[in-house]
Length: 224
Image 1 (cartoon, rainbow, N blue to C red):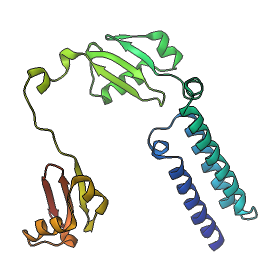
Image 2 (image 1 turned 120 degrees about the vertical axis):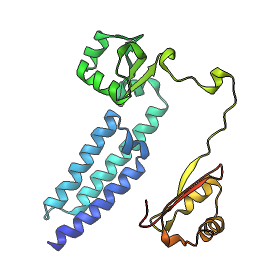
Image 3 (image 1 turned 180 degrees about the vertical axis):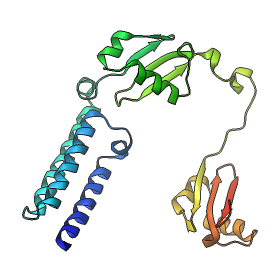
Image 4 (image 1 turned 30 degrees about the horizontal axis):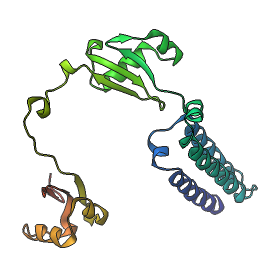
């Protein structure tokens, strides 16, 4: 039992490292090749966990090989448009000026139900509101609404509007997030001074956010 536990922990760490090496996009928005690699890595990691007679290094070597192949292929794809289109495909316009392109829908094996569901998730309930809808290479749908249904912007009204500051989490459940301090121009001294004015310490704070505009929000533990 303990051998299974140790092997599982080791392979879990190996897979996590592999995912980090392949980049953040690997976790969020998978391209076809990345999805294939992810599935294969999970299978390769499962084999040594289930078969205790198989050396754990077999799993390591296979995972490392796949990671290297993915990194190298990603580098090549970055520098070759033709290969990128072969591996990842091209974006496809499925709606133009509120009209569905049925030929493109069939080519991408996309049903009307799939399309309407994705549009609703983009807060679009009427096809006539859509200027363009594009199926991206990762399968997601990008939607551009017609100008007549978009909210009026300060630029269109020719008025100035304050630029909202970047907001970041400074304290999470009593733990200071030092990386976030740099993002918004805060430092530990300033945070402690703000908390001191409320007779609080970092350990007493459930959540604190701050922004580059100097704004901040503090929520104490046990309060909403």
